[in-house]
Amino acid sequence: MEARASAKYLRGSAQKARLVVDMIRGKRVGEALAILQFANKRAAGGIEKCLRSAIANATETAERENVAVDPDELVVKTCFVDMGPTKNRRRVRPAPQGRAYREQRHFCHVTVLVSSGEDDGAAKTKGKSAAGKAAKAASPKAEGKAGSKGGSKKVAAPEESAEKKTAKRASKKAEAAPAEETTE
Image (tube, rainbow, N blue to C red; front, side, top):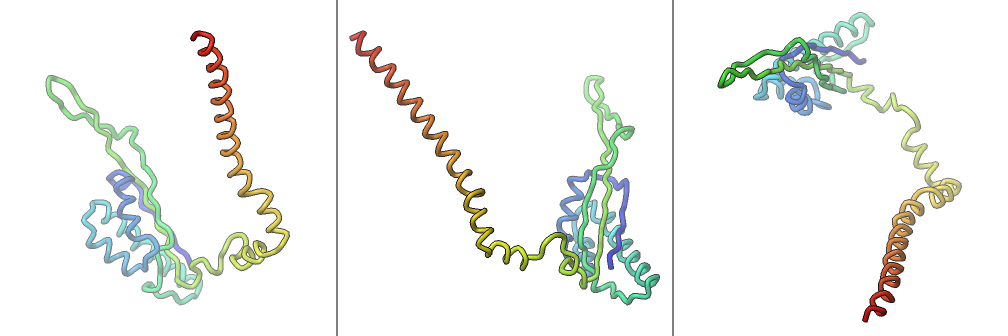
C-alpha cells in the first residue's frame, strides 16, 4: 500500500528543504515525525504537514480498499524536493547610494511517498532478481564475455596511450640529439 502527498509553494529554497528531507528518508513514520518536530529548520514544519497528509492518504486508501493498515507500520519510501518558481517573485531591497538590490523569493515543492512495510521493494523488484544475476555471472558463457569485453580494454587503452607518449618523447629526443651534436 502506497500513498503520496505533495506540498507546493513552500517558502524557502529547495536546497535548504533537501537537508531536512534527507533526514527522514527511509525511516518509519513515527520516527520521521519525531525528527521533524525537533529539527531546528524552517522547512521542517511544511514537510511535517506533508508527511501527515501522506499518512492520512494511506489510511483513507486502505479504508476504501478494505485493507487494514497500521499508521505506525508505514515507512517513508521516497521523498524529494523540487524547485518552485522565482519568476514574478522578485522584490527590491534598498541599498546604499540610491541603488536597489534585487531579491528572489524562493519556493519549493515537496513530495512524500509512504509505504507499508510489507512491499518495501522485495515484492516489486524491477528487472532481474539478485539470484538470477548471480546465476548468470557464474555461468561459463558469462565468464567468457566478461573477459573479452570489460576489463582488458579499459586497462589497455591507457597503457597504449602511455606507450605512444613515451615513443613520441623518445623520437623527439633522438631528433634533437643529432642537431645538438652538429652545433658542437
